[in-house]
Length: 505
Image (cartoon, rainbow, N blue to C red; front, side, top):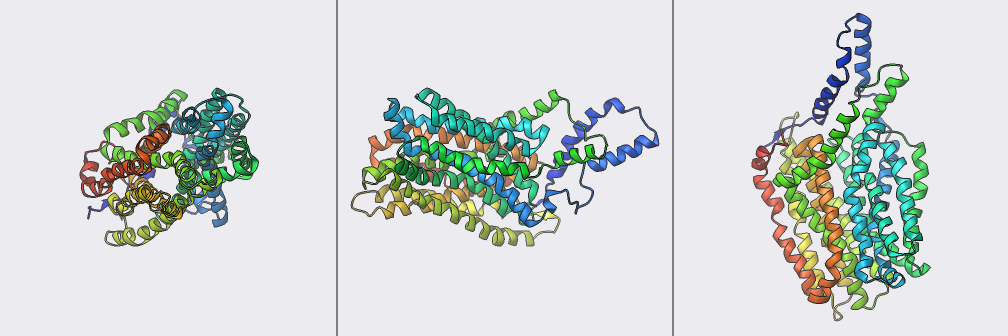
């Protein structure tokens, strides 16, 4: 068992940053020393933090109902943005025929949307830093909706693909900032982990339901443009609720409190310093960690491979179920319900492991200590077997002589394994690197994950046509076997890797 580690304080890490900013912002007033200014400074410093642990302004102290509503808002937005990746898939053949392009070119609609999701989080970071989290949703969601609408109105493949990319880019900030909203609302040490897992689940439920809902929309309405209108129907009504929602960002709430009291607002860094900080946190450091830190790199590779296989299935499932079983496009989307069920079961699995093994590890150490981050990996070590099992299951049962329900059920262990690895990996990252560096590590994971999501659909059909269903899927299964030991390796050697990392303290 890995040794226990002292609890890391994310507040301490943020205090360090804020300390640097405060010293910069207050340097021009260093000569003042009268009592009135001292009192103002003391009162102003109180506005830079909650007045007490029970401060009603702290979102963590809101009523349960209010917290659930404010958790559901980014959850539904995250679902609709992730849903947008795969709801387009059933319309690919019709898009190709109508616009006179190959299936491969039409498939770029998935790849470019996913590429936008990989690059888009950088758009939301400056808004969140200067105006709070609510502003990110209010400013980016309408642009997302407009580009989705433009997709539906496109008359040529170029405009469709360009609009798909920008729809993904402006939808991405909701996925990126949603986790921060959940962290604002819930104490991660006392029950907040389940809320975080349920939010993250939207990134898997959306893509797994997209082909099912999109297939039936296409079959009943008859034209691929309805796939875009479905996204708007999910996203648009919720957008109006945003104007009645509350800000959850601690920094923005305290800034408004200081302004309302006529006190100096918490100091802001100069724009140049702020932009440099955002560049480091959202772009430079994630890439640096991805290339230099083994823990970040291997977890990102594993999660990204599983995500890439999911995106490959957007092409593979219609190829298999329409080609082998004679399904309609709507019926082929129904096959994704196996993956959907698997992702739901992963939440239950994570909760059980968290309430048993992780709680047991906590009871063995002092109250002011936290278990070693490696205690978070039990779920991943078990779940890693689900991916190859599900892939081999699908590979060798998808044939005319076997009932269609059998390969469909193979999606359950795959979806379960994919999600449990991700949940376990993200909590391990947060426990290992803390709030500040953990945010960059999660950003690195998300970037590579959606890059894989963009690339895999580009070669899926060719692979299945050339290798056949059994060996094409088995190739993916064998690759998953190579990655299966990653959670075990991190459990055993994680403490040594953490000790060598410059991103852990």
